[in-house]
Length: 135
Image (cartoon, rainbow, N blue to C red; front, side, top):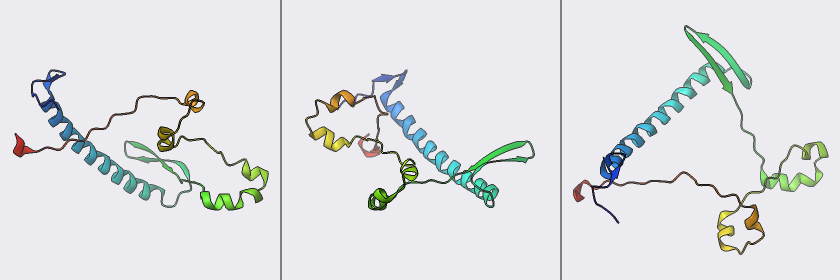
């Protein structure tokens, strides 16, 4: 592990970058939570009697569009039990999407499947613990 404090990242030491990242991460976590809370409060007030869909409101100099949404997902076990009895037009409402089971893929010999795999870089993760005693 390289703990040298003289590593430069965009004219800052790595320690300065880590310190700033920790602060920004905390600020971002707070801002995300606060934005979610405010959005829920505003939308509950505006949309309490509304049907799903977009609704427009005017409040002083603000033009607000609030959209009431619902999530729908299938109960896989129940669907499997009744699928053969569904009429065709209802079966047409269901998409069976292939998805990669990463743990199985990593363990298997997959020369044919490999040609179907599209690989892109994911956002890296970062976890930092600060030990002020170790300074």
